[in-house]
Length: 80
Image (cartoon, rainbow, N blue to C red):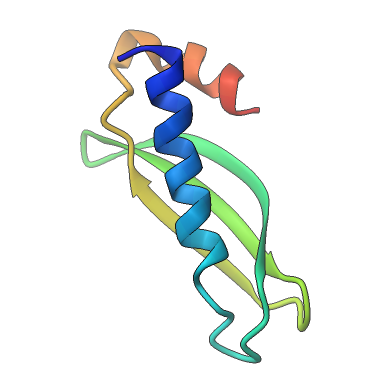
């Protein structure tokens, strides 16, 4: 998978975040940070978000098929 493919994948994650209203007030979530983590042997892009209106926090987890064990540190640098 190329960097361009990875970036398209990550952009689609942000589309999901932007299309998800806050369950408390209906406001928009803003991404605070994003990290790649391995959960039960499966790589995930973990994105911590906060509502722009009420401050409610929500964590989004997206499967990250673009991550291989040897590339994990490289991907983390790209996301941060």
